[in-house]
Length: 219
Image (cartoon, rainbow, N blue to C red; front, side):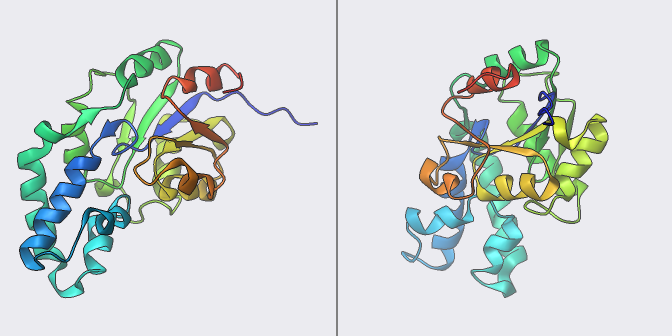
């Protein structure tokens, strides 16, 4: 019987996984959409937009106005970013423990790279990540395997040793498409039950659960 290789590499989605940007994202979408369609979009209507790229989300609203919507979105989002984005409990501390334990770690996000870096500035985790894969680095975003495979290439690691962690089905499906193990996060804005339908290998209830996983312990 083939033994499962120990996990040496951790790939993290960013928004909604490490940094709680849910309120920021929801309010940004509401600001843009209610400016054009007053009263049409409630909070619950925004939830499907958490995860996909801005292009995909706004194309579903009006394909003719995608560029205008994105420009308005980014302007509002940047202005409110540091006020509304906050770290999830235990993230910085856990990341430092994992780094000290020798883990290879990367961000794999559908967000533009400059906004990922802006978010990283809010985390007390300087030097933790070996690389960042963002929207600007790839042709195809998650759930396509391209960004995950690019991360493996940059980290000089293998699929068998890698875990993809995220708060949305794009992360779970992307991980499966790339052939790596996957972990959902129970603090997802879409709910633990929603993520479980995509059958991740693990479900984290706190970021520190990763410390047990990399030691090969049950969570």
